[in-house]
Length: 263
Image 1 (cartoon, rainbow, N blue to C red):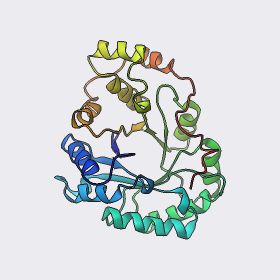
Image 2 (spheres, rainbow, N blue to C red):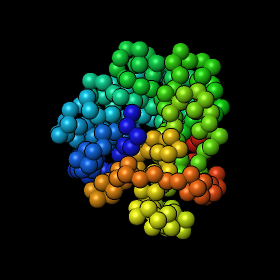
Image 3 (spheres, rainbow, N blue to C red):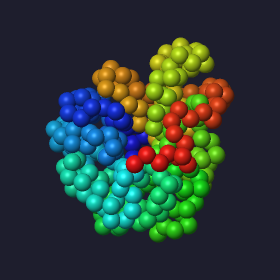
Image 4 (cartoon, helix red, strand yellow):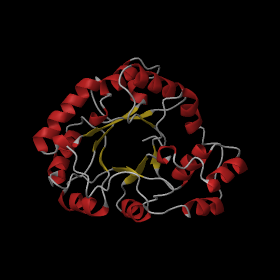
């Protein structure tokens, strides 16, 4: 699984998503993260088909939406996503939210296990799962989650969840790593950007990588896509990593998974 990927949340289907992915692949990205609810799987599939690299070089992720929890519904939703993507296999399939109001995520997980056993998916995981949701899965699974994709940024570093995932060999992955741009003017990050001659976004992404977290920043602007991936030629000192950690407020920007029940 590549350490950096392109997230396409709220990227419009059609030319916008196709051009964003082509720009990302040209810049060296090999991981693309979409979801059924994003409504752009067809555009992602078109970009893959028109790509300058082989399918085998790419790592494609999509997710089952809340309205399709349950064993059979998840299998059907997977088939629909694969049809839109135009793919023979998927690299990573995630349960998008635990959806506690329905309490079907263990049943949904069983469907992901089947897809994995059948060789249709190379890795399976979850998204927005808290520790107690993961514990439910771990107590009832044959195959444990390989990835947990969650909101993760310097204001919300999820340290306890991260330690739990490391203990159980579940790779943490950051969505909204830049807090939708909300951290780009943060004085500590601006100062570090000047020190390392990098952008504040690059400082945050580098912090992700050095904490062992896969990251999928979203952008539709080619120069930002290139910039976000240009983070492998420097390393933050431990002192500067610790300084970034002081920004944590355990502050979510988005919904608490225990309360998010949108269908």
